Length: 222
Image (cartoon, rainbow, N blue to C red; front, side, top):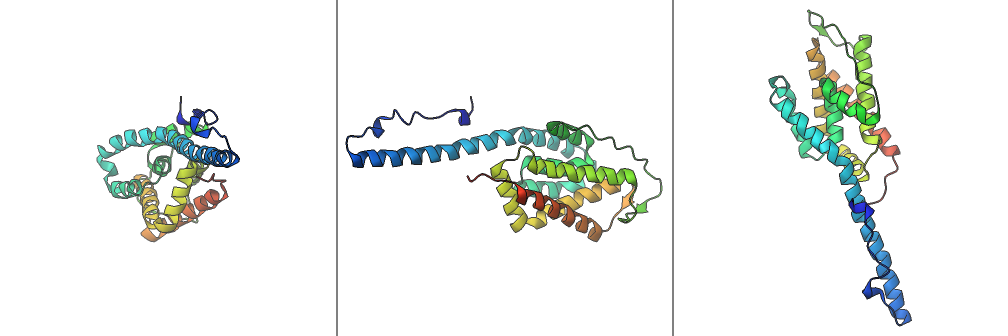
């Protein structure tokens, strides 16, 4: 039984007995206020239940990532995003670009097939060219953007959505830096260099697209 399944017996409460019109009016106001207050509490509980599975998943993957030295360069930006209380699912789906195990796990929540990224890494390091991207790399990046958007639109939480909207407006630099770092890491892993400016521009584009989708969501008043 979850909090949202419980409803207090408002009608039978002894404090709601009435013997005069004034008392009856007060009782009706009390009942209405109690119902609204309980609805808010229940809504918070519902949102927390949705987020809980992603909290555990993020904690599990954090342990695996921290002990793997190759991820050291992204940890500061990752922890900065978590510190600001970006939703666990949002943090995870950005991270999924550089870890297919994470990608497989979270795509299953939206009933999507696993991603097969079979790119043959070139021996000679190349420079990133956004006007001429390898088709397999482009497909992987597009899946990534699609997945990030899914993270804030599928079974979304009103509380988390409002929080992300607020953070993007007030602390977007942290999110930009995190997204940019993940994108740079991904390319470096397949032997491709990208300038900080290019990576930042792509990060700006991704977050602007996410913001468009978030703004379209019907968020319940908490």
